[in-house]
Length: 343
Image 1: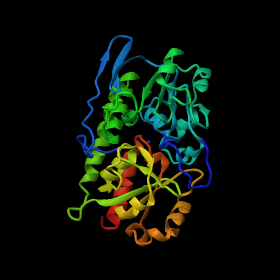
Image 2: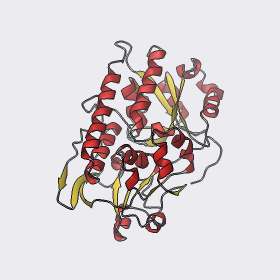
Image 3: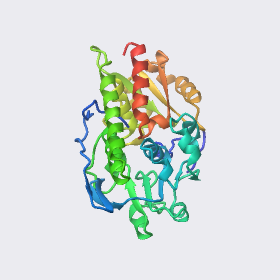
Image 4: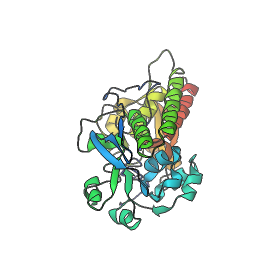
Protein backbone atom coordinates (compact mmCIF):
# COMPACT_ATOMS: atom_id res chain seq x y z
CA UNK A 1 0.00 0.00 0.00
CA UNK A 2 1.32 3.39 -0.97
CA UNK A 3 0.54 6.25 1.37
CA UNK A 4 1.43 9.88 0.68
CA UNK A 5 0.05 12.95 2.34
CA UNK A 6 -2.48 12.52 5.11
CA UNK A 7 -5.41 12.87 2.77
CA UNK A 8 -4.48 10.33 0.15
CA UNK A 9 -7.24 7.73 -0.39
CA UNK A 10 -6.87 4.55 1.61
CA UNK A 11 -7.96 1.22 0.05
CA UNK A 12 -10.22 -0.64 2.45
CA UNK A 13 -11.31 -3.53 4.47
CA UNK A 14 -11.03 -0.86 6.84
CA UNK A 15 -12.87 0.26 4.34
CA UNK A 16 -10.39 -1.22 1.92
CA UNK A 17 -7.10 -1.16 3.70
CA UNK A 18 -7.91 -1.86 7.20
CA UNK A 19 -10.42 -2.35 3.97
CA UNK A 20 -16.11 -2.39 7.09
CA UNK A 21 -22.39 -2.05 8.64
CA UNK A 22 -25.37 -2.12 10.56
CA UNK A 23 -28.87 -1.27 9.82
CA UNK A 24 -32.19 -2.81 9.77
CA UNK A 25 -34.85 -2.07 12.27
CA UNK A 26 -35.81 -5.07 14.40
CA UNK A 27 -36.87 -6.83 11.29
CA UNK A 28 -34.32 -6.42 8.54
CA UNK A 29 -34.61 -2.82 7.39
CA UNK A 30 -33.61 -2.44 3.76
CA UNK A 31 -32.20 0.73 2.28
CA UNK A 32 -33.33 0.23 -1.25
CA UNK A 33 -30.86 -2.40 -2.42
CA UNK A 34 -31.31 -6.09 -2.23
CA UNK A 35 -33.49 -8.49 -0.33
CA UNK A 36 -33.33 -10.08 3.07
CA UNK A 37 -30.86 -12.87 3.67
CA UNK A 38 -32.01 -15.79 5.77
CA UNK A 39 -28.89 -17.71 6.82
CA UNK A 40 -29.41 -21.44 6.79
CA UNK A 41 -27.09 -24.23 7.83
CA UNK A 42 -27.03 -27.97 7.37
CA UNK A 43 -25.25 -30.01 10.02
CA UNK A 44 -23.69 -33.41 10.10
CA UNK A 45 -21.75 -34.76 13.07
CA UNK A 46 -18.46 -33.32 11.81
CA UNK A 47 -19.34 -30.56 9.36
CA UNK A 48 -21.70 -27.66 8.75
CA UNK A 49 -22.82 -26.20 5.43
CA UNK A 50 -23.69 -22.51 5.15
CA UNK A 51 -24.34 -20.19 2.24
CA UNK A 52 -21.47 -17.74 1.68
CA UNK A 53 -21.66 -15.30 -1.23
CA UNK A 54 -24.40 -17.37 -2.83
CA UNK A 55 -22.51 -20.66 -2.63
CA UNK A 56 -23.19 -23.52 -0.25
CA UNK A 57 -19.87 -24.15 1.50
CA UNK A 58 -19.17 -27.05 3.82
CA UNK A 59 -16.79 -26.51 6.72
CA UNK A 60 -15.17 -28.79 9.22
CA UNK A 61 -15.11 -26.87 12.50
CA UNK A 62 -11.98 -24.67 12.31
CA UNK A 63 -9.26 -25.40 14.85
CA UNK A 64 -6.72 -22.72 13.84
CA UNK A 65 -8.76 -19.82 12.44
CA UNK A 66 -7.22 -16.52 11.36
CA UNK A 67 -9.16 -13.28 10.91
CA UNK A 68 -8.15 -10.24 8.90
CA UNK A 69 -8.67 -6.70 10.08
CA UNK A 70 -11.12 -5.16 12.52
CA UNK A 71 -14.16 -6.60 10.71
CA UNK A 72 -12.91 -10.16 10.99
CA UNK A 73 -11.39 -9.94 14.46
CA UNK A 74 -14.36 -8.28 16.13
CA UNK A 75 -16.97 -10.55 14.59
CA UNK A 76 -15.01 -13.41 16.12
CA UNK A 77 -14.45 -11.67 19.46
CA UNK A 78 -18.12 -10.68 19.79
CA UNK A 79 -19.04 -14.37 19.59
CA UNK A 80 -16.56 -15.30 22.32
CA UNK A 81 -14.21 -17.02 19.88
CA UNK A 82 -10.98 -15.22 20.73
CA UNK A 83 -9.67 -18.19 22.68
CA UNK A 84 -10.04 -20.45 19.64
CA UNK A 85 -8.16 -18.20 17.22
CA UNK A 86 -4.69 -18.86 15.86
CA UNK A 87 -4.35 -15.12 15.38
CA UNK A 88 -5.35 -12.03 13.46
CA UNK A 89 -3.73 -9.71 10.91
CA UNK A 90 -4.37 -5.98 11.01
CA UNK A 91 -2.87 -2.94 9.38
CA UNK A 92 -1.23 -0.70 11.99
CA UNK A 93 -3.59 2.09 10.91
CA UNK A 94 -6.17 0.28 13.01
CA UNK A 95 -4.20 0.61 16.25
CA UNK A 96 -6.24 3.53 17.64
CA UNK A 97 -9.42 1.55 16.92
CA UNK A 98 -8.03 -1.36 18.97
CA UNK A 99 -7.50 0.95 21.93
CA UNK A 100 -11.13 2.04 21.75
CA UNK A 101 -12.55 -1.42 21.14
CA UNK A 102 -14.90 -3.20 23.57
CA UNK A 103 -12.74 -6.26 22.81
CA UNK A 104 -9.32 -4.74 23.45
CA UNK A 105 -8.61 -7.48 26.01
CA UNK A 106 -9.17 -10.07 23.29
CA UNK A 107 -6.79 -8.21 21.00
CA UNK A 108 -4.18 -8.37 23.75
CA UNK A 109 -4.60 -12.12 24.22
CA UNK A 110 -4.73 -13.22 20.58
CA UNK A 111 -1.51 -13.22 18.56
CA UNK A 112 -1.17 -10.52 15.93
CA UNK A 113 0.35 -12.24 12.92
CA UNK A 114 0.96 -9.16 10.78
CA UNK A 115 0.64 -5.36 10.78
CA UNK A 116 -0.07 -4.83 7.09
CA UNK A 117 -2.29 -6.85 4.74
CA UNK A 118 -2.89 -10.54 5.08
CA UNK A 119 -0.88 -12.76 2.74
CA UNK A 120 -0.88 -16.40 1.80
CA UNK A 121 2.57 -16.71 3.39
CA UNK A 122 1.25 -15.49 6.75
CA UNK A 123 -1.60 -17.97 6.59
CA UNK A 124 0.63 -20.90 5.67
CA UNK A 125 3.32 -20.02 8.22
CA UNK A 126 0.66 -19.86 10.94
CA UNK A 127 -0.60 -23.31 9.92
CA UNK A 128 -4.09 -21.83 9.77
CA UNK A 129 -6.97 -24.02 8.64
CA UNK A 130 -9.55 -21.26 8.06
CA UNK A 131 -9.47 -17.56 7.13
CA UNK A 132 -12.06 -14.80 7.54
CA UNK A 133 -11.62 -11.76 5.28
CA UNK A 134 -13.35 -9.60 2.68
CA UNK A 135 -13.04 -9.57 -1.08
CA UNK A 136 -10.68 -6.95 -2.52
CA UNK A 137 -9.60 -6.13 1.00
CA UNK A 138 -8.03 -9.22 2.51
CA UNK A 139 -8.60 -11.57 -0.41
CA UNK A 140 -7.19 -10.39 -3.73
CA UNK A 141 -6.38 -11.91 -7.10
CA UNK A 142 -3.58 -9.39 -7.60
CA UNK A 143 -1.91 -10.25 -4.30
CA UNK A 144 -2.33 -13.98 -4.73
CA UNK A 145 -4.55 -14.75 -1.76
CA UNK A 146 -8.00 -15.97 -2.76
CA UNK A 147 -10.35 -18.65 -1.43
CA UNK A 148 -9.48 -20.83 -4.41
CA UNK A 149 -5.72 -20.50 -3.89
CA UNK A 150 -6.02 -21.13 -0.15
CA UNK A 151 -8.12 -24.22 -0.81
CA UNK A 152 -5.22 -25.65 -2.80
CA UNK A 153 -3.06 -25.55 0.34
CA UNK A 154 -5.80 -27.00 2.56
CA UNK A 155 -7.13 -23.76 4.05
CA UNK A 156 -10.86 -22.99 4.12
CA UNK A 157 -12.22 -19.45 3.76
CA UNK A 158 -15.24 -17.35 4.63
CA UNK A 159 -15.88 -14.00 2.91
CA UNK A 160 -17.60 -11.07 4.61
CA UNK A 161 -21.08 -10.94 3.09
CA UNK A 162 -20.74 -7.15 2.78
CA UNK A 163 -18.19 -7.74 0.00
CA UNK A 164 -20.12 -10.39 -1.95
CA UNK A 165 -21.50 -7.78 -4.36
CA UNK A 166 -17.97 -7.54 -5.80
CA UNK A 167 -17.15 -11.25 -5.78
CA UNK A 168 -18.21 -14.27 -7.83
CA UNK A 169 -22.00 -14.43 -7.74
CA UNK A 170 -22.77 -10.73 -7.84
CA UNK A 171 -26.48 -11.39 -7.33
CA UNK A 172 -25.79 -11.41 -3.58
CA UNK A 173 -26.66 -7.77 -3.03
CA UNK A 174 -27.79 -7.02 0.52
CA UNK A 175 -27.55 -4.04 2.81
CA UNK A 176 -24.49 -3.83 5.09
CA UNK A 177 -26.50 -4.53 8.24
CA UNK A 178 -28.17 -7.54 6.68
CA UNK A 179 -24.69 -8.71 5.70
CA UNK A 180 -23.45 -8.28 9.29
CA UNK A 181 -26.34 -10.27 10.73
CA UNK A 182 -25.77 -12.98 8.13
CA UNK A 183 -22.08 -13.25 9.02
CA UNK A 184 -22.69 -13.45 12.77
CA UNK A 185 -25.33 -16.13 12.26
CA UNK A 186 -23.14 -18.13 9.88
CA UNK A 187 -20.10 -17.86 12.16
CA UNK A 188 -22.26 -19.07 15.01
CA UNK A 189 -23.11 -22.16 12.95
CA UNK A 190 -19.52 -22.76 11.80
CA UNK A 191 -18.11 -22.56 15.33
CA UNK A 192 -21.01 -24.14 17.18
CA UNK A 193 -22.04 -21.04 19.14
CA UNK A 194 -25.47 -20.65 17.58
CA UNK A 195 -27.24 -19.45 20.71
CA UNK A 196 -24.69 -16.74 21.38
CA UNK A 197 -24.91 -15.60 17.76
CA UNK A 198 -28.71 -15.53 17.83
CA UNK A 199 -28.70 -13.51 21.04
CA UNK A 200 -26.19 -11.02 19.65
CA UNK A 201 -28.08 -10.54 16.38
CA UNK A 202 -31.38 -10.11 18.23
CA UNK A 203 -29.82 -7.51 20.51
CA UNK A 204 -28.36 -5.56 17.59
CA UNK A 205 -31.67 -5.58 15.75
CA UNK A 206 -33.55 -4.45 18.85
CA UNK A 207 -31.15 -1.57 19.38
CA UNK A 208 -31.63 -0.44 15.78
CA UNK A 209 -35.41 -0.66 16.21
CA UNK A 210 -35.17 1.46 19.36
CA UNK A 211 -33.00 4.01 17.57
CA UNK A 212 -35.52 4.28 14.76
CA UNK A 213 -38.13 5.47 17.27
CA UNK A 214 -36.02 8.59 17.87
CA UNK A 215 -36.21 9.76 14.27
CA UNK A 216 -37.88 13.16 13.88
CA UNK A 217 -41.43 13.11 12.53
CA UNK A 218 -40.80 15.97 10.14
CA UNK A 219 -38.09 17.26 7.86
CA UNK A 220 -36.97 14.01 6.27
CA UNK A 221 -33.61 12.35 6.86
CA UNK A 222 -30.51 14.49 7.29
CA UNK A 223 -28.16 14.49 4.30
CA UNK A 224 -24.80 13.04 5.37
CA UNK A 225 -21.48 12.87 3.55
CA UNK A 226 -18.76 10.45 4.68
CA UNK A 227 -15.22 11.79 4.29
CA UNK A 228 -12.51 9.22 4.70
CA UNK A 229 -9.59 10.83 2.89
CA UNK A 230 -8.49 12.29 -0.45
CA UNK A 231 -7.66 15.75 -1.76
CA UNK A 232 -8.41 15.92 -5.49
CA UNK A 233 -11.07 13.25 -5.04
CA UNK A 234 -12.66 12.53 -1.67
CA UNK A 235 -12.79 8.88 -0.64
CA UNK A 236 -16.28 8.05 0.62
CA UNK A 237 -18.86 5.28 0.75
CA UNK A 238 -21.56 4.01 -1.55
CA UNK A 239 -24.42 1.79 -0.50
CA UNK A 240 -22.32 -1.35 -0.01
CA UNK A 241 -20.16 -0.04 2.84
CA UNK A 242 -21.16 -0.08 6.49
CA UNK A 243 -21.52 3.72 6.95
CA UNK A 244 -24.43 3.75 4.50
CA UNK A 245 -26.54 1.67 6.89
CA UNK A 246 -25.09 3.36 9.97
CA UNK A 247 -26.35 6.67 8.60
CA UNK A 248 -29.73 5.21 7.71
CA UNK A 249 -30.23 3.70 11.15
CA UNK A 250 -29.29 7.01 12.74
CA UNK A 251 -32.06 8.73 10.79
CA UNK A 252 -30.02 10.23 7.99
CA UNK A 253 -29.32 9.41 4.36
CA UNK A 254 -25.94 8.89 2.72
CA UNK A 255 -25.68 11.45 -0.08
CA UNK A 256 -23.91 8.79 -2.18
CA UNK A 257 -26.27 5.93 -1.42
CA UNK A 258 -27.10 5.62 -5.12
CA UNK A 259 -23.54 4.56 -5.90
CA UNK A 260 -23.39 0.78 -6.31
CA UNK A 261 -19.98 0.71 -4.63
CA UNK A 262 -18.40 0.09 -1.27
CA UNK A 263 -15.62 2.52 -0.37
CA UNK A 264 -14.94 4.64 -3.42
CA UNK A 265 -13.65 7.97 -4.72
CA UNK A 266 -15.91 10.71 -6.06
CA UNK A 267 -15.42 14.33 -7.15
CA UNK A 268 -15.89 17.42 -5.00
CA UNK A 269 -18.54 18.81 -7.36
CA UNK A 270 -21.00 16.00 -6.58
CA UNK A 271 -20.42 16.68 -2.87
CA UNK A 272 -21.21 20.36 -3.35
CA UNK A 273 -24.30 19.50 -5.40
CA UNK A 274 -25.54 17.07 -2.70
CA UNK A 275 -25.41 19.86 -0.08
CA UNK A 276 -24.78 17.58 2.92
CA UNK A 277 -25.93 18.87 6.30
CA UNK A 278 -23.39 16.79 8.21
CA UNK A 279 -19.94 15.46 7.33
CA UNK A 280 -18.87 12.21 9.00
CA UNK A 281 -15.09 12.17 9.38
CA UNK A 282 -13.47 8.72 9.53
CA UNK A 283 -10.68 8.77 12.10
CA UNK A 284 -7.67 6.46 12.11
CA UNK A 285 -3.95 6.35 12.87
CA UNK A 286 -2.07 8.46 10.35
CA UNK A 287 -4.99 10.66 9.26
CA UNK A 288 -6.27 12.50 12.36
CA UNK A 289 -9.84 13.72 12.22
CA UNK A 290 -9.01 17.31 13.10
CA UNK A 291 -6.62 17.56 10.14
CA UNK A 292 -9.35 16.35 7.81
CA UNK A 293 -11.88 18.78 9.24
CA UNK A 294 -9.41 21.62 8.78
CA UNK A 295 -8.81 20.56 5.18
CA UNK A 296 -12.50 20.44 4.30
CA UNK A 297 -13.02 23.87 5.86
CA UNK A 298 -10.08 25.24 3.87
CA UNK A 299 -11.66 24.51 0.47
CA UNK A 300 -13.25 27.73 -0.82
CA UNK A 301 -15.72 25.87 -3.01
CA UNK A 302 -17.19 24.08 0.02
CA UNK A 303 -17.92 27.26 2.00
CA UNK A 304 -21.58 27.25 0.95
CA UNK A 305 -22.16 23.58 1.81
CA UNK A 306 -24.51 23.53 4.85
CA UNK A 307 -22.34 21.14 6.88
CA UNK A 308 -19.28 23.34 6.45
CA UNK A 309 -21.16 26.60 6.86
CA UNK A 310 -22.69 25.38 10.14
CA UNK A 311 -19.58 23.52 11.34
CA UNK A 312 -21.37 20.18 11.57
CA UNK A 313 -18.74 17.47 11.64
CA UNK A 314 -19.14 14.10 13.34
CA UNK A 315 -16.01 12.02 14.01
CA UNK A 316 -16.32 8.24 13.65
CA UNK A 317 -13.56 5.76 14.48
CA UNK A 318 -12.56 3.42 11.69
CA UNK A 319 -13.37 0.63 14.14
CA UNK A 320 -17.00 1.77 14.11
CA UNK A 321 -17.10 2.44 10.37
CA UNK A 322 -16.18 -1.00 9.03
CA UNK A 323 -18.50 -4.00 9.04
CA UNK A 324 -18.78 -5.33 12.58
CA UNK A 325 -20.80 -5.32 15.79
CA UNK A 326 -19.67 -1.76 16.58
CA UNK A 327 -21.79 -0.47 13.70
CA UNK A 328 -24.86 -0.23 15.89
CA UNK A 329 -23.01 1.80 18.51
CA UNK A 330 -21.85 4.10 15.71
CA UNK A 331 -25.45 4.50 14.55
CA UNK A 332 -26.59 5.28 18.09
CA UNK A 333 -23.87 7.90 18.53
CA UNK A 334 -24.58 9.49 15.16
CA UNK A 335 -28.30 9.44 15.91
CA UNK A 336 -27.67 11.26 19.20
CA UNK A 337 -25.64 13.88 17.31
CA UNK A 338 -28.34 14.35 14.68
CA UNK A 339 -30.99 14.83 17.37
CA UNK A 340 -28.73 17.38 19.09
CA UNK A 341 -28.80 19.57 15.96
CA UNK A 342 -32.52 19.08 15.45
CA UNK A 343 -32.24 16.45 12.72
